[in-house]
Image (cartoon, rainbow, N blue to C red; front, side, top):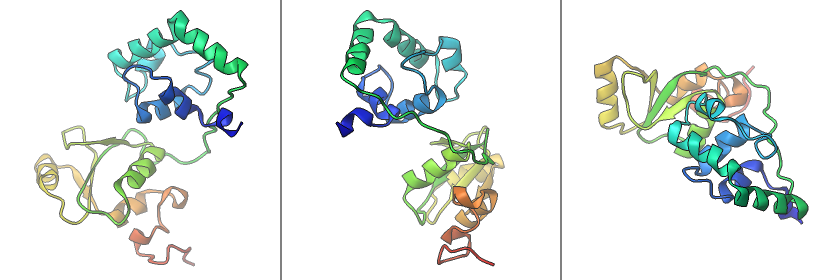
Length: 185
């Protein structure tokens, strides 16, 4: 019974929509919480940074295919009601910024990626002229060199924490100079 009420992004991933992996399923669930009842148009999908023409066409096609609509209807009849994400009102201080991560950091890379995405950033895999910041840990490698050549601002974890509100992993994060991770007076 509990499995009928899992998060929407898990259901979207499980449906096997072509070109939609776990990350894009989460993006779709966040951007289009009513996607099962009201699928987005190709234009609406293309307005999302991570979605290009091939993915947009694939999502639109999925929700047009009669076979897929029957599966969704069958899931509804069986009582499957996915949890709709409710975005917590939070500051998005990195909205529109592209950040690349390099080196060894104090927390798992996936955790930092999620924190950055929640703060509005786009996390890229390589440094380019479009990169706003390079988050560099120890042993950063060639990305640091390329960032410096391109004039990209390089941040350590403490500098990144200073850009974020405390709820998003900011000022009170251990890397911000507060090892206990507790509020400072």
